[in-house]
Image (cartoon, rainbow over the protein chains, first blue to last red):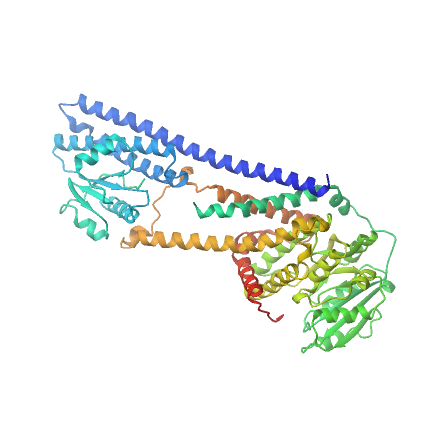
Length: 225
Length: 411
């Protein structure tokens, strides 16, 4: 074997090792991301269950659990941002991402239900938005709508926004869609129980909110997952 | 499919070639070249300095040649004025009475004609060329001459760097030139050189007689000569410690003009008269690896640049369309958190970073093995951040010129 051939083979081996190391590092980081998401979801799941239990135990004074609910919604928002980023990195068809999104959606629905229960028990009127989107390439305005909702949430912290991937194959989401009677014209919004479709501008979206509804403090999730 | 996938083959090739250079540097022939010592033979040497409007630098160039550590009776300096229109003849006239210097004036005919006139007037065994804007270290010729010990060696190249780089563009070129020192040293050890640069390359007179004088070579007479030497089955060596400093273009515009000439000259030579060398096993590593990689590098530089432009503008347009209508007080403030989770590491970015780091490492190797003085920090920084933005400009321009058959003036 000539010197050049030998050097070419060694260089090829080095290149493969380097490319393999890079691929492994990227995969390791992505797995670490998924593991972190999973950990956060597990913790949130326990916290949600704890809140529900707390809610049941304090039947006489259910409003005492309202503070915990607010904290949970903030954490849910952070989880949403992370999950959205992980989806960008790993792809919308990644099975782990899909599973995490399903768990996340369930957490959102549970938080939404708790919020409604607390509102009924305590006589509060939180403004809730159910936001349905799709990442399947069939919703040109979903990114704009998601960003506008992020702005609204940031500007009006009283908003509680729950975002759902309309195309996610999850029984609870299908039931939520059936209950709220949301059609597949995306983006779709259910603002305080009122359905609306499409997104043209921020001003148009703001007009869909009840008068004076968007002006006090809490937090929510708005990220397109 | 993500457009980033298109970059993978080019990044893979870049890392492969850098690895190949590193392995070759560590191989026996390169190691032997680094330990090469002066031999007893002291051949007669003539250094030709072709000058065209070099009034400001030719005197210093000539002084640096006169300071070479080489027996005076064996060293002749030939200054050829190629019909300059500035004060070059007057600057040359200062050396008229020097016993080692010969002055020649001729009508303007191009650098290759100036070299040929110089060659015709000397009987020296070894003939060197030095651009009139370059300066040599006193021991440079002592480093060059032992490389001619093997009779198959027809030419020897030196180790070029930029003379006193001042601005970022010059520092960037300095890093690039020093990278060239590493490449030239490694490739010379396996006879893979395809250019004998104007600053301080030397030729065996007998070989020049056999293969002929310098030609126009599409304004790259040094490349044409090197390819012709390879075509005739001779070898080109490199002396990594024969330091020569050359003046580099100080602005982006001038740099792009110079490199357009080099790149279009390369393409015209290699895809024209010397097409037979590409992919030809007879020409060893030059034909099978170096020339194909050099051609692909031009294409990949253009593709990667256009791809980067596409991704950049696509992201800008997307970001703008998403934010339109939202108050600037919100859109202009970053809302993400600084967390490891959001580090934007992808296969594409890490592979690119690996290729870049390997490149920077080879630049540092080049500085060390040539013992080139000066601080390289600015060079490495400007090379990292500027080269990828500027190089595609001359690659695109040269490729367009060759495709459209457009010829540009030297200056």
